[in-house]
Amino acid sequence: MDRARYDAFVKTFFECDPVAVTDVFREFLAAMAAEEALPPGHHMSQNYDTAQANPEIHLLPGNLKDARDAIFPYFWGTDGWSSKLHLENVRGPANYASLIGAIACLLKNPNLCTDSYSQRSNELEVKAITALANLVFYHTQDPWGVFTIGGTISNMYGAKIGIEKVLPVAMRKGLQGQTVTGICSEAAHYCATTISGWLGIGTENLHEIPTDAALAIRLDLLAAKLDELYQRGSKVAFVIATFGTTDAFGIDDVAAIRKLVDEKAAQYGVPAPQLHADAAVGWGICFLNEYDFERNLLQLSPDLKPVLARIHQMCAGLQFADSVTLDFHKTGRGHYPSSAFIVNRKDDLKYLARSKDDTPYFPEADSRRDPALFTLETSRPGLGPYMVMASLNGIGLQGWQMLMSRSLELAHYLKQRLDKLDYCMVLNEETVGSNVVFWVLPKGRNAKQIFAALEAGTLPPEDAQRYMAEVHRLFSKRERALDPALDARLSFTTGIGYRPHGHDLPAWKAVFFNPKTDEGVIDRLIYSIEELV
Ligand SMILES: *Cc1c(COP(=O)(O)O)cnc(C)c1O
Image (spheres, protein in one colour):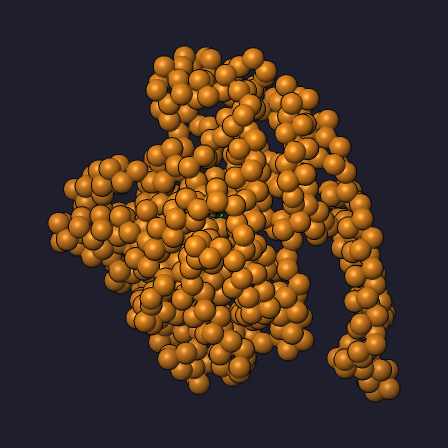
C-alpha cells in the first residue's frame, strides 16, 4: 500500500479537523437560515425518476466538502418545519437544546447495547428514563426502560411483555396454536395493528373498541369484549390505552381500565393483560401536573383552569399502567429517534430477558444494567438520552410548562373561533391537548345540528355521505387557494376515531406544536374559511 496516500486519507476522514468540520456546519446553518426565510414547503422538488438510475459512488477519496456536496441538494430539499404556519400534524421543529445533546452524542457515538460500548452514556440513559418515569408515573419505585427507534417499537415492547405474561413459553416455543389477543380503542394509533402482525398474534386478533365522543375507550364495551374473549378461551395479552390520540388527543381512562382488567382477570382466573399506555403524543401534558393555578406564575388565561384540572385528573391515571410509550421526538420537540419505553416495575423486564448463552458477543454483559440482555435491538444509538437530558434541563420545568400551555391556549382559541361559525363544528371539544379536529361545511348549513343528528342516528346515510364529501371538498378547495406565505397548512383525516353509529368522521386537523404559531395565524385561518364557503 502507498502509505503516504493512505495516511493522508485517514487524516481527512478519521482525525477531527475542527476548522473543516465547523466550516461545513456553518454553511449548513447559513443554508438553513436562507431556507427559513422562504414560505414552508418543499423548496426543491423531488427527483425520484433517476434516483435509482444513478447510484454513483465516487472513485477517488475526496474530503469533507465532497461529503457535503453529496447530500446538499437533499438537505436543501427538506423542510425543517420551522415555519409557524405548519399545523399539519404532531410534528414540531426540533429544539436547539436537543441539537446540542445530539451533537455531543454523535461526536462520541456510543452504542447503548452494553456498558463496554457506551460507558457513561448508558448511565445517562438510566437517568433520562428515570426522569421521564417520575414525570409520567408520579410515584414509582423501580422504573426502568430504554430508548427505541419509535413509538411503534416502544409499544411493541409493551405488547411483547404481555404475550410472555399470559403465555410464558412464547419466546421459545411460539404461540403453539393458542389464540392470543390484544385490545385497543378505535382511535388508537394504527401501529397497534402493525405490532399484532409482527408479533405473530395476527392482526385479526387485535380488537378495537369504540370510543365515546371524547375519544376515550368505552369501558362498558371493553368489559363486554373481555368477557367475550375470556369465554372463548383466548389469552388476552395486552390492552393498549391511548393517552393522547394522534388526531384528536383523546385520552383513555387508565385508572378505570386498570380496575376493569384486574377484575376480569381475577374473575376468569387468568393472569392480567399488560396494561400499556401509548402516551407517544400525550405525555407532555404531565409537565402541567404541578402547575399552581392559584399563583398562576405564567399568567395563563382563566379559561385554561378547567382544562388543567382535567389534565391533572387524567395524568394521575398513568401511574396505574404497567408500561408506557413516550415519544420525545413528538411532544418533546426532540430530534428523531427519541422514543422511550418505560416499565413501572423493573421486574417486568424479566419477560424479555435473554440468557448470556443467547448473547455470545457480550460475555461481559451484566443483567443488572446491560440493555442488550433484553432489547429487541442490538446496537442502539445514544441520541435519545443525550437529547432528552439536554432538552429537559436546558428548557427547565417552567419552560416546558410554557410550551405545553401555549399549545393549549392556541387550540382553545381556535376552538372558540370555530364555535362561533354555524357552518363549522369542532369534533374534539372535550379533549385537552394541542389538536383541533373540525368540520367546515358550506355557508347556510348548520354543522352543529347535522352533527347532533348524526350522533342521534337520525341523519339519513345519503345525507351523511353528502356532508362528509362537502367537508373534504372544501378542504381541497382551501389547499388549492392557499397562499404559502400567509396561510397555515392543515391536514385532513379520514376518520378521527370516534365512530357514532359506525360513521367515520373525516375532519380538518390543526395541531399546535410549533412554538412560534400565534393568534394571528389562527385569525388568518378563520378568515380563509370565511372566504371559502
Ligand atoms: C406517532 C404515534 C405512534 C407511532 O410512533 P412513531 O414514533 O411514529 O413510531 C404511536 N402511537 C401514537 C399515539 C402516536 O401518535
